[in-house]
Length: 114
Length: 114
Image (tube, rainbow over the protein chains, first blue to last red):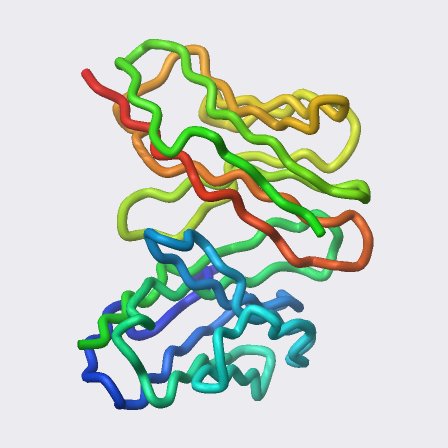
């Protein structure tokens, strides 16, 4: 199993531009999570999906952020327009639909907005 | 709501010395508990978990954690650390009922010195 795959690994963009982060979860996993990691705020859960349906998006910072999961093998996190304070490492994770199942994380996308 | 507190942001220790990383949680319902490890430029990896049964759980690389319900703690220990254990360690909690939302602590950076 290739694990959770995220792309790109690094993204540098200018303020105001649209940014799209991509994630391929582990096959057979029913849950998909998007986290953001910063020095100041640590790991924050942005949104999670169950069977491609968004369950809890209360962690999404504002309307500039949106996430989709069109099928079981692909999800995107979009920021439009991007701002310097969005600079962070964004992680995607997936897990089985079973209580206590651990999360499997991708290697993250390091986003820098200048 | 659940919360996790890791009191130590950084723990320096000499190689082959014992170490304890502290974790306390707060929850009004029963929970599952996890420790994750993050090496530089990588995603988080599961180290060990407590779901039920024996309150002492072990990882394959010598770490152990003990669930203490009365003290709401889940401290991580290792009797003798290696340079390769240098990483950031995150304690996490999730409800035992239908929610799969994992809440992370702020992390503890373990720095092993020769």
